[in-house]
Image 1 (spheres, rainbow, N blue to C red):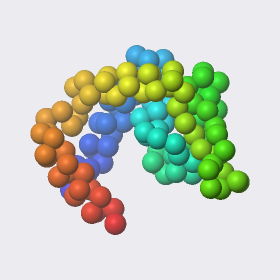
Image 2: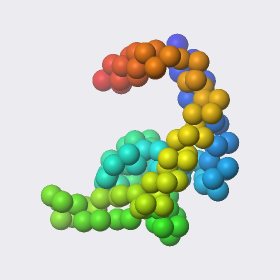
Image 3: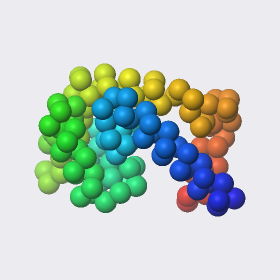
Length: 126
């Protein structure tokens, strides 16, 4: 089973790389945009991306330079910043999500099967 999960992970990573290029993004930039569904701290984003905060910072710096992401003061933690998409970032994220759905490795699953798989994977990660 571990081999199957690993193979699926590699297939998804390849899918993201191929689709990111179409939007002039790197795979890590696409992953960051995909995961920025709402305001997040750098640490939260890094956790979702499966990388160190310093790596996420590098990615966010590039996205910020492109006007896609902005850093804002955290509402309850003066030491932290929240990352938020700009309107351009939101538009690009929407495009990315559409492109990622094309021929997705998950496309063969019904919505119910996708939800079931998500629940099972979350249970395995506890």
